[in-house]
Image (tube, rainbow, N blue to C red):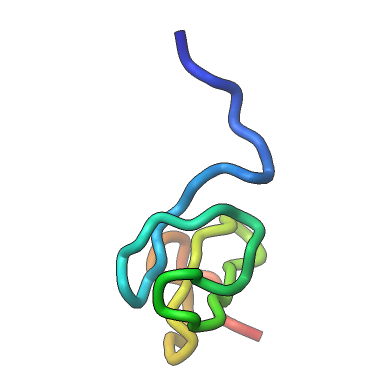
Length: 59
């Protein structure tokens, strides 16, 4: 049986790969602020100019 996805689903930090809870913007393992793609919701490294998942340019 699979669980329904929610806003607090787990994701991985793009810096240290630690598991973190969405929508928390700060990784508890490395203390870095995570930028989230406004289209697909994937966590991004701050220096990226576009989302590697969906290609959306950062604003």
